[in-house]
Length: 327
Image (tube, rainbow, N blue to C red; front, side, top):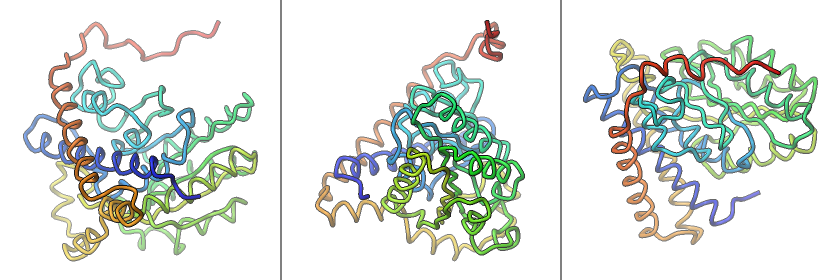
């Protein structure tokens, strides 16, 4: 199932938004304007964008610590995302969540977490809710190759398969859990090889190709909506930047060579998708340039919005911390 022309253009736009958003985050972090850790999604844009393009607005997603790309791919407003990073009251979580905890229920984003694999049971719970409520939304969760070894991940896949829940488990295999290589931490060739043990399909996808991600996710969504249960998708991707901004010890660890990183950069997901659009006549080079120009300006506007947003009042510290009592 190939994306139509409008979807192809939307995918490129959102990939550009993620790329320029992350480049801006790196800049303001280097300038000392952003306090605390941030985990750039540069190099992995096609995974989230291709997958989310196959979802409806009411479908749910949950993510992880590398959390800026997923919401933007699902359609979240970059102004409120940037405000959240700067701890401002106009952020998604009113400045209380920060870089690793973006949530926007209006477009189905359940939230993200810095605790490895913690979003996997949450997304599985959303799938259970869909079944109990007899609604046809699906739930998709992004997690890394490191998270694939966590018990919460295996427990969730077992439950989702047993109860045929409409959940899509999407492993972003970028080959490193901080500095620990995939080869030194996983006993199988591919994370997707584990899927048959849980009675679900497992598929390995080129995570640098947004169209390939769209096609694989569309099939998984169709299965989920038809009541056929979950799918495990393994997206083979690569993060071009280090694990986290500000971790000098990681930069000095030499866990991967400069040559390896440069080789990976030759398959830039934005360049791959742009070439596909031009070749298919979906957009000209000039139209692609215009999309890039517009999205750069949108991110610049988001930063200005965030800088002008007020900090939350101290009195608001405990607001939204607890759910209202069930009556």
